[in-house]
Amino acid sequence: MVPITPKLTVDAVIILNGKIVLIKRKNPPYQGNFALPGGFVEIGETTEEATVREVHEETGLSIKIIKLLGVYSDPLRDPRGHTVSVCYLVSGEGEPKADSDAEDIGLFDITDMPQMAFDHNMIIDHARDDIDAILSKM
Image (tube, rainbow, N blue to C red):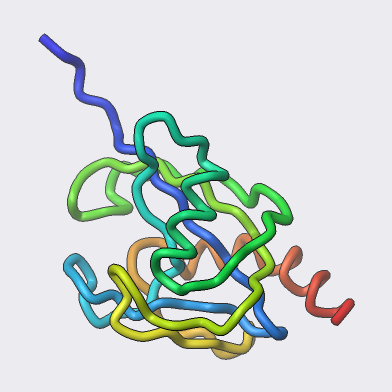
């Protein structure tokens, strides 16, 4: 019997021109809700590589990873099943455009974030000091 293990995912808190980049989800779960860009890690990929790929697929942006924000592993964080997400703070470059799993793109002030899918509001709350430190240097 093959053991069932959680799926590995990534999420990116993208800072672009002093704003946080979110995607509006095209597909369930949370279809039509805003979320951090991210997705599933593919076999043979590092979490950093997956973050770069997923952000580019969903937003068209190039990114530079600034730091690891945390690992989120609540078994109930994703209604599709148990996922473990590695979350990075990144800086974005380019003109964002919705692509892949994204219906739309939104740029939000850190003080005016919408309700988001999954546990993404909690991730932003945990990253607040790091985000504020970067924004204060802009």
